Image 1 (cartoon, rainbow, N blue to C red):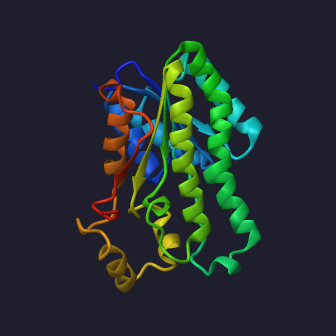
Image 2 (image 1 turned 135 degrees about the horizontal axis):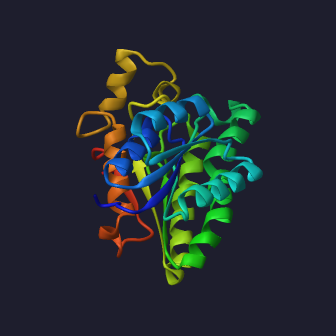
Length: 248
């Protein structure tokens, strides 16, 4: 029960890596707001996991949605100990000059602007309590980019830099900020990353991962739990690669 008594918001928490983080946090004793643009998915997961969860539908690229999310979390749970910025999207693989502007805007809104917005509304609350943890779900794409995903890669590189900058600024007020860098995983985004889901394409992706498998939601849950627990009280500003050796 490493998170016993803690409260958390997890964006994109209804599926994929976010769901893995939600499940692990609840198993370790936390109370969790599952925030997702898929409200039905959030409700279904909350119903399964029980009274220590709270479902909330929101588009986290919109300021008033994020402010409402944080206000509801504080009202329902009393305070917010942990903010997990997990929600993310990608664009279809393609030459960088051929990616549609609307795809670029969507990637930046969800992967970049959302972190700005959650920080805007959660950090003042954490500063008032002189404690808190922010965890950003970045990607190995921000460290070792794959071709034809340039703007997604750039968004995750931004997230890693933001993590380090936030960490150095917020450490004196008792707030830790870290990131995890998963490799491609068994999530709804996998097909989009690869362009198509065929045995041949999967084999090419897996050949770049020394451990020989994709990331699983449980892998992210385990890493997130450690970094958000008091066991990691001396760790801030790291971008932990949970990637089976992809970035070696």
